[in-house]
Amino acid sequence: MKNTKKYDKSRQLQSIGGYLCKDRVELESSTGAHSISSMCENNENNVSEYSHRLLEKIIDRKNLNLAYKRVKENKGSHGVDEMSVDELLPYLKQNGAQIRQSILDGTYRPKPVRRVEIPKPDGKVRLLGIPTVTDRVIQQAIAQVLTPIFEEKFSDSSYGFRPGRNAKQAISKSKQYIEAGYTWTVDIDIANYFDSVNHDKLIRLISDTIKDGRAVSLIRKYLNSGVMTGGVVMETEQGTPQGGNLSPLLANIMLNELDRELKRRGLKFCRYADDINIYVRSRKAAGRVMDSITKFIVFMLT
Image 1 (cartoon, rainbow, N blue to C red):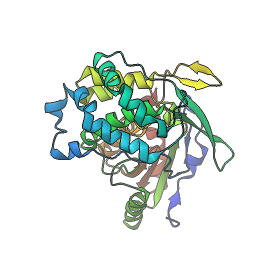
Image 2 (image 1 turned 180 degrees about the horizontal axis):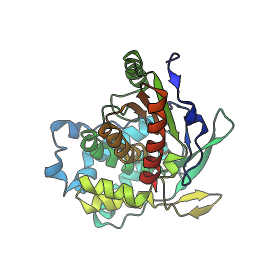
Image 3 (image 1 turned 90 degrees about the vertical axis):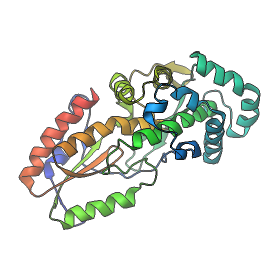
Image 4 (image 1 turned 180 degrees about the vertical axis):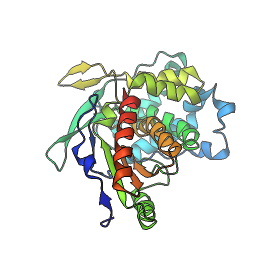
């Protein structure tokens, strides 16, 4: 990509509506794509069949057992209750039936995430929200069921946090665009994207596909579960905190609206999470794309 011309204006983009679009792409992998359960490989992810009974599929024992194995394999730190991954199995054996029933009844309440600051190379910090290990299992169970449903809707130009897709594929596709003559790149990185997602818009997008209101309500509870910092719980009115098993999928559901808009305009692009490269043939075209797409992103997030 060294021969690609960068559109200079993207380096001068200022904060619009509270969201800063940067021109630097950071291909990061702090959270991997969720595995799809074996249940979902047997054509049991048919939307029309399961859209009204999705919650039962989420709390199915096989799905929850697979979710537990994923959480166990990924290890990770404790949440606000300080329960470790090693303590999870005996806890679930004793309380699993009660947890499943409370989810089914709609009385389950996720615990707040634990705020963690991870230093970045530029001296700044990345804010992570670490759920309890129990909530990680439930989030993973939700992700395993929802992922194959939404994968059918996602763009071929999206590569981040998706099964079977990675940064190398995105780079390879970018190279194809450049070699085809699209040598000007509008390079956008949405700053603080994970902390800026509008809950109402996200839930509306989920509800357009998922018709089981109980499952949608459970997702809403995770969005609103709050963040604990210094022993104080703060409400979360927006955002999908990085660190949760469900957050990458939710982020892609929202950003798929951007993918659809870019495709509607006939643009060549690659997206890796909140980093977007749009390829055009001239500086003038890059300027037009930067201005219009920036406005669309602000509208999408607010």
